[in-house]
Image (cartoon, rainbow, N blue to C red):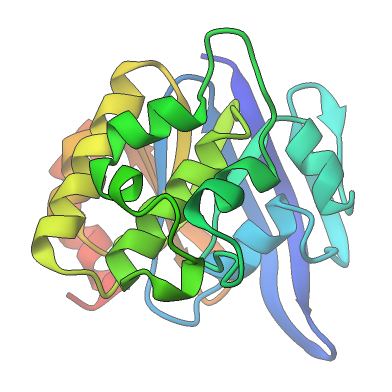
Length: 233
C-alpha cells in the first residue's frame, strides 16, 4: 500500500523547547492511521508540522511524491490535506452555511453543503445560526463538515471527540466509519481505544516526542498490554 503522507526524522518545538525528536510516521493511502499517546507527548505538534502550521527544525514532510517540509498551510490544503483541529476553531461570526463555504474546494462527485447537511441533520436545522450559537457537539460536526468541504485526500482529526456527549461521539464515530468505507484516507488523534478499534488499520504510539511503537490493528490487538504501558492505562 502506497503512502499518501510521510513524516521522516522530524524535529520540532516552540522556541528553545524541542518537542519532537526524530518522529517517523507513514500514512498509507486508503487506510485509517491512529496516532496515540499521553497528553504532552507531541501528537498535536506532529499534526501542526504536517499541516504547515509549524515549521520543523529538521526532517521531512512529504505528501505523495512531493516534499512539502515547512510549506504554508494553504499549500498543504492544495495538496489535499483537510484538518479538523483540536478545539474545533469554527468561525464564530459566520453562519453554519458560511463556515462550510468559507474554505470549500469543489470536486466532481465530492462533498457539497447539501451532502454535509445530509450527513449531519443537526447542522441543516441550524444552517442560519452563527458558529458562536452552536453547542460544542454541533461545532465539532461543523468542523468536520468544513474539512470535508475541501474534498481532502487525507482527513486529519485532532481529538475530534474529546469532551463531547456520548450520543454526539457515537454520531461522529459512525460518520468516520462511513468515510473509511468510502475509501478516504484518515489520520486520527484520539484517546478512545475502544472506538478506535472499530476503524483503525494502523497505529503509532508517541512517547516524549518519539514514535515508540507502530503496527497494524492485528499487531495492536496482540500486543495491547505493551502499548498500554506507554499510555499508562
